Image (cartoon, rainbow, N blue to C red; front, side, top):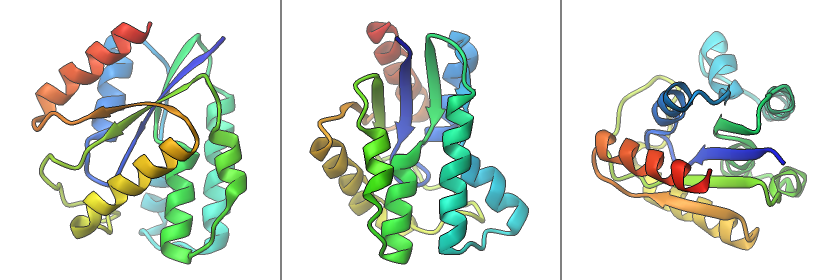
Length: 167
């Protein structure tokens, strides 16, 4: 059975850097965040309809992933929260896709420094968004771990140790 390791959490909490580095170091396939690729090409502007398109494309990227274990730089949980926060639309169909016993969520606490990026929107709201992620993961009875180290190097070691222990 395939095991998914999904990095999730608020913006600028190290998800992409950790996912990319661990994918390379552990020789595991990486499912990138489609939203970033898409929005970089659009200058960061988006509509509600585009959120649905992004969700569809993220699902497609996941379905194309091969291997017994896969690392995801976010997944539909992030898209669910994004849709709810920006457009005030609760889309439970996104959550029903996530409630899988083979996903292990790695929730990144926003206790590392903010790194500016043209696509980031919530510098001052990261703690609330972290708690929203945590609440939803608990409601889903999802398997999750929290990365709370305060430096990237320590966070990397924490995540690497976590993934090694789950293998």
